[in-house]
Length: 204
Image (cartoon, rainbow, N blue to C red; front, top):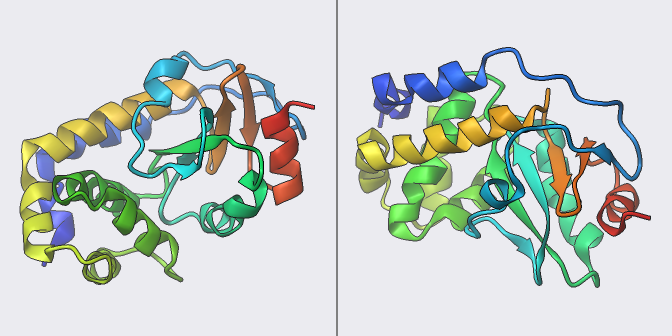
C-alpha cells in the first residue's frame, strides 16, 4: 500500500506551514519557562484520542513519530504521571521529513476506525525509522483495516485535520520534539527524565 502517495497535494499546506522556520523559544529549565507561542491553550488541548494519564489535562506534548526522544518519553510517561491525577494530550509536530508527515496523516485517518490511540501506541512502540512499510505493519498490529486506512488517508477529512494540527504546532513556536506546554502557561523542551517532567507538571 503506497502510503506516501496518499499525501499528495492535500497535505502540501500542512508541510508548508510546519516546515517554515519556527519561532524562537527560551532556554530549557527543569520547571519550564513562560510559554511564548501564539496557539491558545484551548486549541492545543483539544482531543483525547492519544491522552495519557487520568484527570484534568495538565500538559500538551508535541511529537514526531520518527523522534527517538519522543519514543523514550512515551515509554516513561506513565512513571512521570503516576499518582498526580492529571493527564497529557498529544499533538503532532512532524518536523523530521515526509515520512513523519505520512505517519501523522495515518494517525489522523485512523480516527475513522476509532483507532487513533491504538495506531499511536503501535508506532511509538517500533524501533527504527517510520516509513510506509512500518506504518502498514503498525496499522495491522493495531487491528486496523489497512485498506480503509489508505483510502481515508487519501480523503479530505484526515488531511484537513492534519493541516489544522500542524498549524497549531507551528504557532506554538517550538524548534524540536518532544516539547510541552502546561495548563498554567509554561513551556519545556525535551522530556529528560520522569523526575524532571514531574517537576514541570507540578510547577515547583
